[in-house]
Amino acid sequence: MTALEIAIALSTMSLVVSIGTLYMAYLAYDAAERAGAVGGETAVLSLINKARDRIGGINMKILDIMKGRNTHALPVNEKRYPVGMEAIYHEAVETFLNNYDLACIMYRTNKLDQERFRRQYGEEIKKLFEDGTPAYKDRLNPVSSPYEALRAVYNEWYT
Image 1: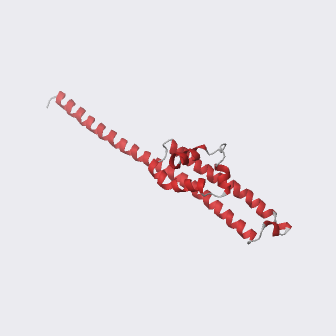
Image 2: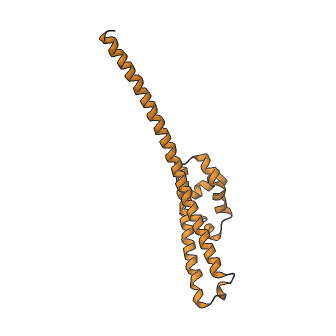
Image 3: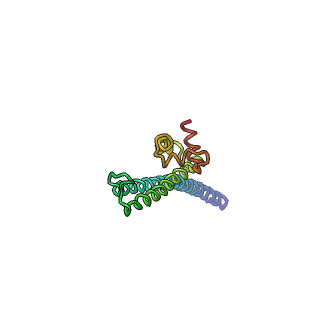
């Protein structure tokens, strides 16, 4: 074998190794991209679930304080508790809707899997607008609602 043949053989082997390395790097990058997308979806789902749990916990505290009584029937020293809890409840609703709006922003900018997002959140978004409590509807229905992405997704899917 001549020096030229050896150089060509080594160059060819280097090229094959380089192509293999490039392909492996591409596979690793693709896996990381998919993991990042799933991580984003998981993070958004976690935020929504935490906010939902917080609202449920606050509702339970309000029910416990009220014990089936009307606000007017509460003793004077107990009336401040439901008022304070109501303020905390409205703050939790804001956080919940902000998390949904964030998820919808991510959906609209293709940072979440489109089909999975609709399967996972579609009915919940519909219920927020159509069957939600007054706390939700009061925040979602005005034209000046700050939840533009959430409203846009609802309109895209259901109107």
